[in-house]
Length: 65
Image (tube, rainbow, N blue to C red):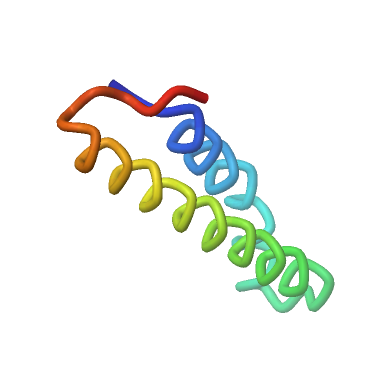
């Protein structure tokens, strides 16, 4: 089972790949975009943690969303 947030996390990381490469090459604007994307990743990851806690506390049934 994958959650919508997990898919969203994977998409966010995939979408950031190009900017990471540009940032590594010295593009300062790409660095800013990567930092923003990583903040979004952090927030999505936190949402996934909450979902997993709800799942655990509900006895294994997925939370309704």
